Image (cartoon, rainbow, N blue to C red; front, side):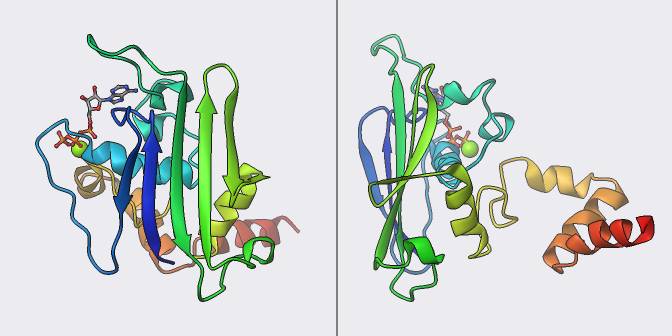
Length: 183
Ligand code: ATP
Ligand code: MG
């Protein structure tokens, strides 16, 4: 699954509409401390359906909306759009008629967030499944937050085992074994 463009408006420090083209291959994001590099990764996580404010380094979900500075008033809305190439037609059936999917998540203060794919309203679950099928998504092991490496190094053996099991694709077996033992 190739992401071709990320578009942000009012999301965290990206108050003005911002577009980032993502070329094939490796992309690096560089810049001084506090310039918004981690916010970009969080935008990716958020548009793919993250539901935990903690994962977004905020107290509540509305904290992703630009909160204002001394020079600029706060905004009431944040929107992130992610363009996903679908020329190989591997998206779930309901999205599979287009060569490119624009997945949009928008949040308004006191109204919560909603999702659209190519302009059509969809459920959070539809967006989460779209990415889960392609082995990516908000909770994918492919997104490693700042500080996470350290926490893995210091983790208890049992927690580290969970990561290895996820990588080996056998995580679901525990649930199934537990269910089998109950029978
Ligand atoms: P580092 O190199 O230190 O990891 P970074 O480039 O990853 O820095 P970020 O953590 O992405 O930087 O950006 C932090 C900046 O984003 C801070 O200046 C913070 O005030 C700003 N910021 C975060 N949330 C909001 C918000 N809701 N409204 C306005 N600004 C915000
Ligand atoms: Mg950072």
